[in-house]
Image 1 (cartoon, rainbow, N blue to C red):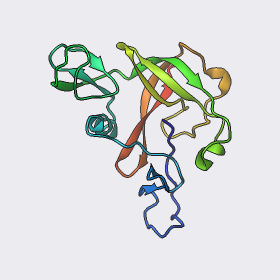
Image 2: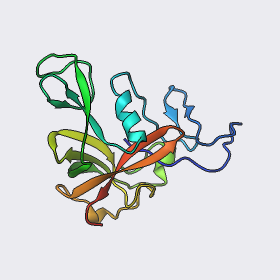
Image 3: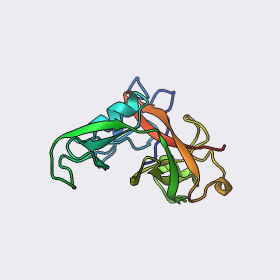
Length: 176
């Protein structure tokens, strides 16, 4: 997932709040600046609600205890429909990464190259989350020099508000 803080200037489309999400012609929600927003479904909505509170939580089976991500209604291990959300430490390691280059969506092109990473959680190595590697929670997507990124590097979660009521996890290097 790649996201950016919305503009603080008034949008050109007549809205008064630049943080108010807009949709493109395909119906995908975006910030006024054109950055994509997550589209929570019923199963994933708690993940985003916890993120808005600054908590990284992962769905777990309430019967067998197995963690699962992405969230889904049924446990793939024991087929139970009972679930709970467990708080994670927010620490992990870079499992994989990509450095996108143009052509990209217009809002992202000016920031390329930046880092989209896959993070393996410390307490749940089978759980992997996708996000951006940045130098601070509110930094630009291209704020980490390419030579600093490597597979296995320790990272920690940080949260960034991208629109009214929408907060996304981002990742910071443990050793800046």
